[in-house]
Image 1 (tube, one colour):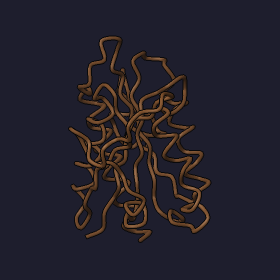
Image 2: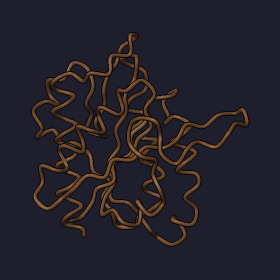
Image 3: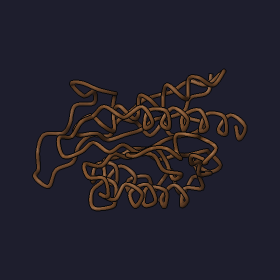
Image 4: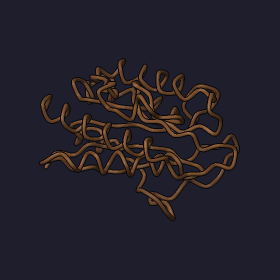
Length: 196
């Protein structure tokens, strides 16, 4: 059964919840399976290497996950209109995958969460798409035929799934955010299946 890699970094839980919703949408498509993975945190201070399996949450990604998937979704919290350092660090280490074309022709989507309504969620989604284009991915977004995209008062954009967590960092997506995340998962899986 083909896998869609749902790869994320999450600090407060919002992005992890979006990842699970996207994975749920992926698995609503016949013949497709979600493989949820995370990236380890990074620090400027030298410390002991992170364990290969985190204490909680999804297992850490391995480069073979990229080779084995037929499509991928990457998610990160917003950091000043860009992805968080752990996701950027992981992507920056994919030089050999770029050179060998590991991701060329695979469908890809992006998702994010912000603590402020205008905190850069669309900018983050767009900046996460740039390295995917360099890797030769086929980008998948959310079309306006998804009714919730026209009615959402919080997260959800045509560039990818998003969540407005608020200053209290509420990880629970709204009904519309959840609907759009699942829709993105279904769309990604459907297109990935056609490309594969």
